[in-house]
Length: 231
Image (cartoon, rainbow, N blue to C red; front, side, top):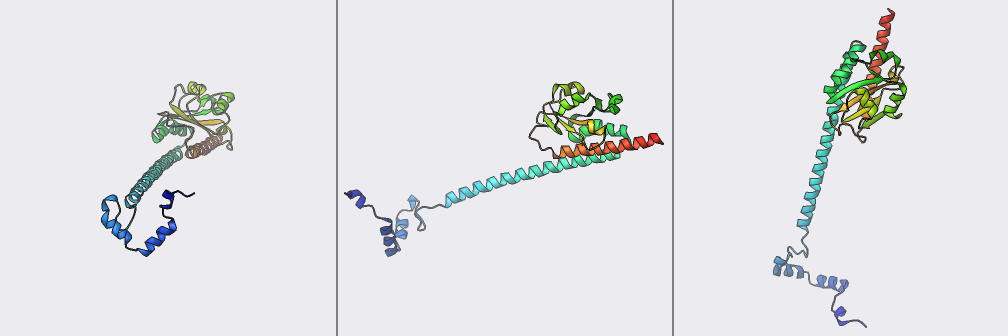
C-alpha cells in the first residue's frame, strides 16, 4: 500500500508539466526569495563555484608553466656549461693541457669540488700524480662502476681512497669503450658540492655527452703526441 506522504511528492513528469504550464513561476519565486540564492530565474547559482574552479585551474596552469620555464632555464644553463667545457677541451694544445682543463677548469664550469680522471691503463701509470689521471688496477676500476657506464650518488670507499677526499656526491662516468686503450680504461669522476648534486634519478644525458667529449678529445691528443714522438 502506498503511503500518503509518498503521494504528496510530485513526479518529474508532473514538475515539468507544471513549469511548462506556468512559465513565469521561476521569476516569481526569484523575486520573492533573492536572499536564498535564487536569482535571475536560476534555482542554484553556480557562478561562484565555476569562478572558483577556474581560478584554481588557472593557478595550477601558472605553476606548471613556471615549472616548465624553470626546467628550460636549467637545461639552458647546463648546455652552456657543456659548451664552455667543449671549448676548453678543444683549446688544449697537448695531452698535459687537456689534463689541466679537466682538473682545474671543469670544477668552476660545473660548480664541482673536484674533477679527476681515473684510469687502469698502464700508459697512464706514470701519471699517478699531478694533473694526470689517477692510476688504479683493473679490478678496482670495475668495482667503481659495477660494470655500468655511469654511476650517480654517494661515493664508494675505494673511490674516496683514490681521490684522497670524501665528496658529498659523485658522478662516475666511463669514457666510451669504443675508443682504444688507454681511453677505454678511463673514468671521468665529477665530485659534487652537495648530496643533491648527483643523485641516481638525475638525468645523465649531458654527463654521458661530456664523457664522450673528453674521450674523443683525449684520443685525438694522444694521437697527436704519438705523431710528434715519431717525428
